[in-house]
Image 1 (cartoon, rainbow, N blue to C red):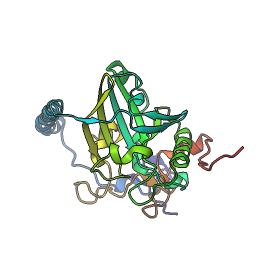
Image 2 (spheres, rainbow, N blue to C red):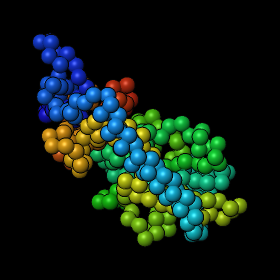
Image 3 (spheres, rainbow, N blue to C red):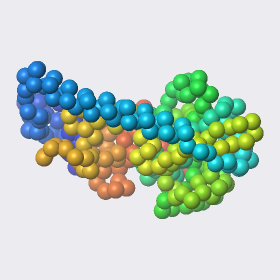
Image 4 (cartoon, helix red, strand yellow):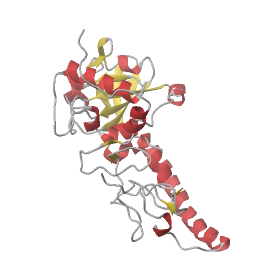
Length: 291
């Protein structure tokens, strides 16, 4: 097993007294920013703050433009599958005015370690929904019953598997299968890719007001947002970082703490968020349980 820490690791003291990363590399060997006095540090931070504030204001302006987009009507009776059987898109609003639906990827018939690492990461950060509910917004997951390469399979079977995955991960947000109506719900979009879509209810009519995909779903994230504030960032290969900065991380690892070794290949290891669930004693068995 690769003993290099996925993200360089937090410092620890070895038996020899040397401070090391969790992967065994000496923390003192990691590259670091130049050391400056407080006045120089604050001066450069103040320059960066001007750009940060401009970024915030631009984000506000984009959100304002988003609120002025036209909307498109969607059939409210489109069928979903829920834990108690069939229901409609309108039902998924739970009586609220707005609905945010995360269209989750699913790999039918495959075990938990093979499921989407991105969906697992983002959904693991959605917990307390009261703030959304206070604004008359329902949040729900729409499992697609497929990913971009595999599926679809039998809708009810795939949905049952995905429900067991939700239970394994300890999530409690509303969870449905969109597979029966996926063509209509994701018209002109790539099925099996994760999407985030917003809907508005006007009586018994439903309208789609916004959708995004890929990095757009980082709206659900806080881990990456916090990493972006740190000196080493996300530690992923695509980032623009100084030479020799750690950049070998992904959202899959071959093991959990304390070393978090990077996955040996693209589909190796597990999504990172699964390790804590296993350590807590939760079963990742997604197989159909027959009476």
